[in-house]
Length: 344
Image (cartoon, rainbow, N blue to C red; front, side, top):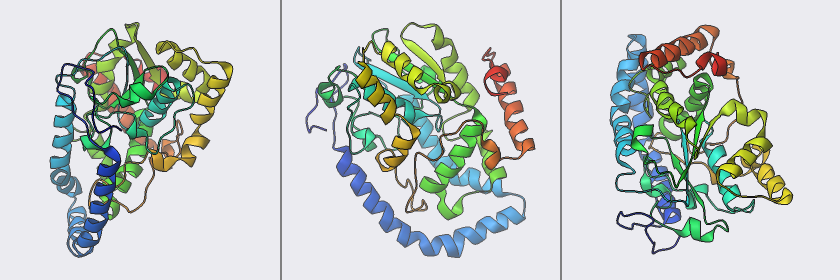
C-alpha cells in the first residue's frame, strides 16, 4: 500500500504500511511466546485445572477474555465512525468464522477480473473493525480501488448492522453460516491465535459462545440485524450452504451485484481461485497469525470449509443445544429468520 492516501470519505485521510506492521507484530508475538512459556506451564495451566476440578472453568475464562472481548466490541461499534461509503465499496458483512475470507476473496477477484494478486489479502481488503486495525490497509487508502481495473474494492466487517454505514451507492454482501459449524471453526481458530495450550474445554467454549461474552457479539443479534437488508437492491444475502452448493453461481451473483461483466475466461479463473483447494494452498495469505502470547506458533485460516460437519467436535446434545438457543434468541428479538429451513 502507498505511503500517502486519498480519503474516499469526509473523514481525515489515514494510512500505514500493513505488511511492516504485521511483520513487527509477528516478531513481538514470537518473543512474548517464549517469555510466557514458564508462566503458561507453571502458573496458568495448573490454575485452569484447579478451576476445572471445582466446576468453575467458565468463571475463570470469563475473566480471562473480558478485556479482549470488550475491546473487540468497542472497535466494532466505532470503527466506521465518520466514514461515508462510496460506489467503489463492496462490504462483506459476516459473523466471524462464517465464510468471510472466502467471500471477500471472491469479491476481490471479481474486482480484479480474476487476476487479484497479493502477498496477504489484507494488503488490499480493509478491515476497520479488526482487533488490530493496522493489520489491514486503511479504509481511507484508495490504493486497492486505484489498482483494480474495475475501480472497486472489498471491505471486511464483523460489526453488527447498526454499526455499518449504509449508502445506496455502495454494495453489500451479508453472509450467514450454521452456528453449529461456526462454533466448531471458532474453536480451532481461537486455539491457534489466542489460547494455544490454554484453550478451554469444548463445553466451556460452548457456554461462552452462547453467552453475552461471545467474542463478536451474539450470533442471533448479528443475523437479525442483517436479515432485513436482503430486500435492498444493493445487498446480496447469502448462506454458507448456498455458496458451497454452487460456487460458480455464487461468483456470478457477486459479479452481478458489483455490476462487473466477466468474460468466460475471467469467470473460470475467479472460480478456480475461489475454490477450497486453491485457497487452502495459499492459506498463509489469509491467516491472521497469533493474537496473544499464548497463541500457537503456527495455525491456519482455511481449515476444512465444510457444511454440516459439526459432529467432529459436538455431540448430538450439544448440537441440539445450539439450535434451541439460537431459535429462542431469534424469537426474543422478534426475528422471522427461517432458522429451521436453513440450519435445522
